[in-house]
Amino acid sequence: MTSHSISSQKAQAAREQETLFQELLEVLDTLDQAQAHWQTAAASYRESPAPPPATSSGPLGWLQSLFSPSSPVTPADPQMQEVIESGQEGIELIRQTLMDVLRRRQVEPIPVLEKSFDPKTMFAVDRQPNASYPAMTVIQEVVRGYRWGDRLLREAQVIVVAPEEESSTPDSLDKKTK
Image (cartoon, rainbow, N blue to C red; front, side, top):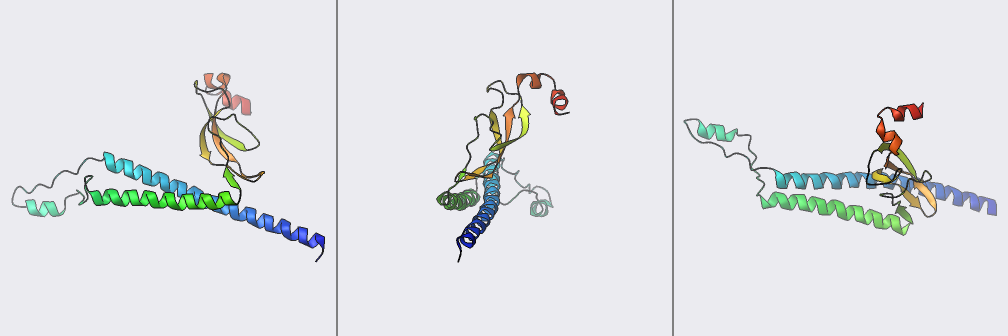
């Protein structure tokens, strides 16, 4: 085997590994979405009012109670709370395991929140006024970016603070992009 064919095989293996990492990042994104869903479900479950009790007055009261829109599960139901917490814990466990595997392979998230915008590792999807931060500071991460060692695996998609002159007139962004 020649040194050229060995280096060619190494390059091919690196490309395949990068593709695998990018596909795993899609799985990680899905787990992040599932985690957010479970957090929202838990919050709305805790805040939901108890369903109105079924009325049993009148000659057809028992029949009305059968078709009542109230759920058999109430916010005070400890079993439902257990299901929600178990779902949250399961998603977090899977997500953390995947992150550990990626870290062992030197795949790391790019920290962006409250950092200055870096066009080498970030893509600004929007600009918003915010007096609390200097212009071009990242205030929201839309899609998490990742590095693989010293290589950019996926750029972060972010929202940054708009410069002062852009935030003063709503159509100023259009004028600058034309």
